[in-house]
Length: 165
Length: 279
Image 1 (cartoon, rainbow over the protein chains, first blue to last red):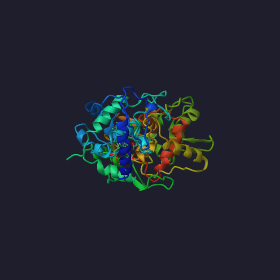
Image 2 (tube, chains in turn orange, blue; image 1 turned 135 degrees about the vertical axis):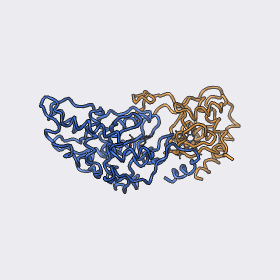
Image 3 (tube, protein in one colour; image 1 turned 90 degrees about the vertical axis):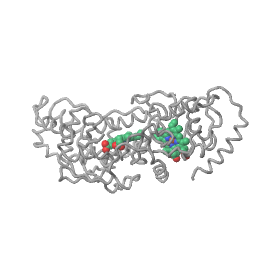
Image 4 (tube, helix red, strand yellow; image 1 turned 60 degrees about the horizontal axis):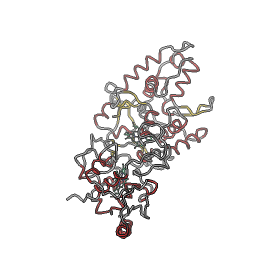
């Protein structure tokens, strides 16, 4: 696959950094996130471990991640309907490291430059930013689509997703 | 494109709601042949084939458009026939006083929006209707996306059904065309999606429960089962832009007029279908 190279390199860097970094319990602001060369983010955005159960709810909630609008996920089959705009997320934890996934959820454009996947932890630099779904103007910085801990929760859930048997 | 093919193959296991028959052909009232698939016009780089939005709808929704007795949009066409004949405004004129039967409008819808030489501007059908109301009838203009406007557009479209869309893109409209094209590919709002993100790169794919079409406007105004009324082009544009978490443009704005001309021209080769039926 196209991303195999990125994946391996990302993980090598990721694993090294993980050992070197001491977690600190301060929230990383959207403008302060340190993306690696392949879009990965080594450090937790909050220092608080993600809650996979909450991550699951965020992924299916239309007002939150709404990830299944674009992605099929077999482990979320009880929540209809799953879209086809992005790849299936089955086996995603076996393809990507935690740092890669944090980067992809926070700002997928760092890993996939032209992707249609929205940036969930970004607050400015938009053309005609709106006030949520009102159609009215919004003022930057906008609140990010997901809060720092919500990103961590989603990443924690993604890390549980294996290929279905 | 390659990437999307992979995405589509990977994500087949969840049952999608009401699947469409994508090979169906559209014949109205057992007689009027509607072209729902055609080669993409040369000026559209991102598509090889253009496909009417009707193709992407469920069997039941498709069927509603095949017979005028089943098409709820035709009720509004009948209302507009009455309006057509009613005098309104200071001049005491009706549409009929100048134009005779609504059938005289056959051939109008396929070429709009178009350049108006006298006014020196690109006009949408809505703009032309309001110009007649204001300058010839001395009547109040209708709201751009109002029911009265949608009804009249439906009447004028209905008499051109089956005729081939053929919107001019060069000469005096070249700058408008370019502005519309630019907007079509510009990512708006916090979701950073352009029209092309959904309707060029992802048509045929589901986004949540919605089956994405190519977003053509040959079927407008559209009767939507969702809100049980006729919906105008600019109201649809506004909804789609809003859904990118963006500040929308206003119906009738120069931006939406340009976008309408551009989007209409992407459908050059399809048939006029309005009023069509969508979910």
